[in-house]
Image 1: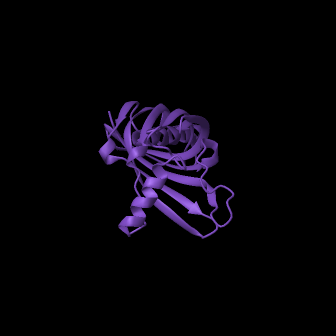
Image 2: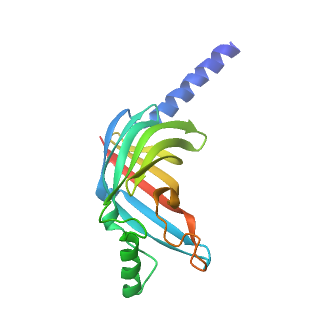
Image 3: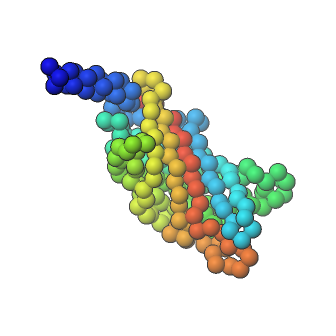
Length: 194
């Protein structure tokens, strides 16, 4: 009797969990409802800059509560800054970020994340993906969460820590009094529809 009760409770729990898991299928990223926030850190002067970049396109393939594959393309020509209120300083920084010192947006207008697999963890997903910036591709891992908004809409959120020198984003690297952190952050929210 005890064994039957445990089995019955397990089935109820399994059913409850699958009711909250996103439906299996392929979802197209809704670009105007998705966002990417970047943050860069200055070590010597102890401050950070942040802003946004637009998501150009993307898709996610979902099964068993995981992202099995997918990709999203980032339009580097749309990079903005949010923390500098002076228009001149803001424009200067944005132009510098688009220059060859940083992302060289003219030559490499797109960055791309191609998801290879994900695994369920206690807090969500551990995602393995190929990240391409400035034409250089590296395999990275990052934490993400996935949830359904309704039967046909999902929300995926991820927090990526990127080693910029891996992608030849070299400005200020080991320069006295102008050293930028080797790591910058991308916080991504993708809304996707079946």
